[in-house]
Image (tube, rainbow, N blue to C red; front, side, top):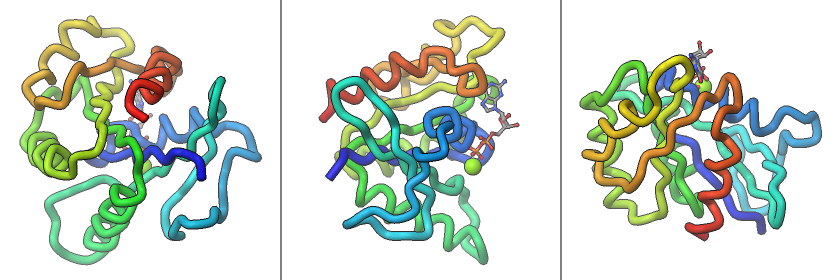
Length: 162
Ligand code: GDP
Ligand code: MG
């Protein structure tokens, strides 16, 4: 069984962009994998020593009705399956109340979390990522999923957490 990374965060922070970047090759998309549930999108991430599976999830919102309930359920299942969680926030939006709520939930979950600050292209990465230290999930890492900037360093973080 390969280590599983769950990609979570509010809608529009760039989760699917990172997922697509990491699973660009056709064979990376995993339709079915022993021990994993369907309904979420899995991909295989090529890494030096050991590949990983990454799970894209719908955004977490505070909505209680309809499709969001399904999406939220998928996030919960993905988190249960995960060995490592990538919690993505948006550098351009800054810290937001939903981020804080998700951070609380993740701290209670007790799994290793990497705090991923996306969309640092064209802005001062250090200044922006510092704003997110207050989420108390360790050192934030700034990336730009559209360009793949710093994504390699992000993947290196996994080894420290497994
Ligand atoms: P998701 O809802 O979290 O899956 O977010 P998406 O991957 O669908 O991205 C939402 C929007 O953010 C899209 O318009 C992306 O093109 C944009 N986006 C994603 N990553 C980046 C990034 O690194 N930099 C910038 N500037 N925009 C990004
Ligand atoms: Mg998405």
